[in-house]
Image 1 (cartoon, rainbow, N blue to C red):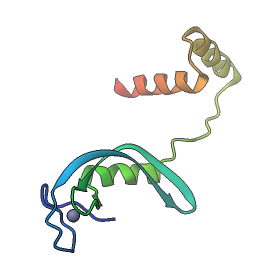
Image 2 (image 1 turned 90 degrees about the vertical axis):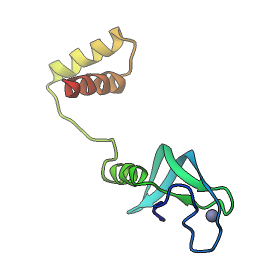
Image 3 (image 1 turned 45 degrees about the vertical axis):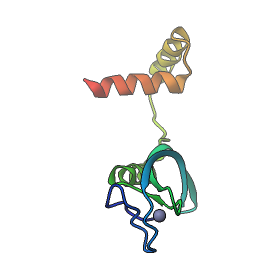
Length: 109
Ligand SMILES: [Zn+2]
């Protein structure tokens, strides 16, 4: 994976001399046999050789997706499970959407 250092000129080893432009891609890679997809990743692409370069923010996001799958098992009391299911129904959300919403809200405070 190449790091983008200079903003406008293509940093390719060949003397390409192309210009970089920003682009959003769905970036898929494999790590420890796991296929990981990073949606809507902002990268730079050369208008001449088409090589893609990853700015620091893109690499940070790739690292995050590699470290955290977004899936984990949580044990809660059955009463809470029931309450969450009812709340999800009331808000016309899936249980997953309801819990994601509640956790995101709780962390914003
Ligand atoms: Zn280039």
